[in-house]
Amino acid sequence: MAQQTLSVLVENSPGVLARVASLFSRRGYNIDSLAVGPTEDPEVSRMTIVLNLEGHALDQVSAQLYKLVNVIGIQEIAEEKAHQRELLLIKVGAKAAEVKPALAGIAAEVVDEREGVCIIQAVASAKDLAEMVKRLNKFGIKELVQSGSIALELGAKTLAEQTAIETGLATSESHQQTEDYQN
Image (cartoon, rainbow, N blue to C red):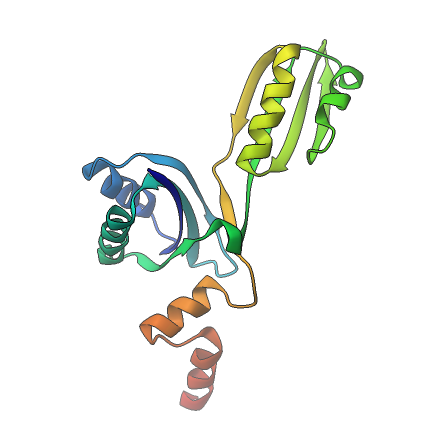
């Protein structure tokens, strides 16, 4: 199976995350990673969903997502056409000076050190984070937490603009022009 990343714009309202997650659960699809947060519009949230699906199953999932009332837009994100990152916090049983050489070449920094342990923060691709964890294993990993993947498409066009074009909905700029006309 191939790993697929979907970017989904949804209404920022209670229960939307549960409805989206249950759609995958009902169809027996496992979500590898799910990150959701606000966008530049406080009424809209953006979900980044990473799945292991084949093409036909991905088409079915997208079609089912579009049927959910709170879904505004969906876009498949190709790895080569986006910046994808994850956040990792990891606590290891070592001092910062011992750990720093293992962090070479990875966007990571020690954010706390006390009582013989340090916490490292890294923002990188999933592949780079896996490499960092591998390097840090020798120090004794006490604890770690990793966010889901987030991604933004390259170029000037936004997911909201693409959705407006595909659905024929007004952009915020044209909506503003309509409001001005009505006043």
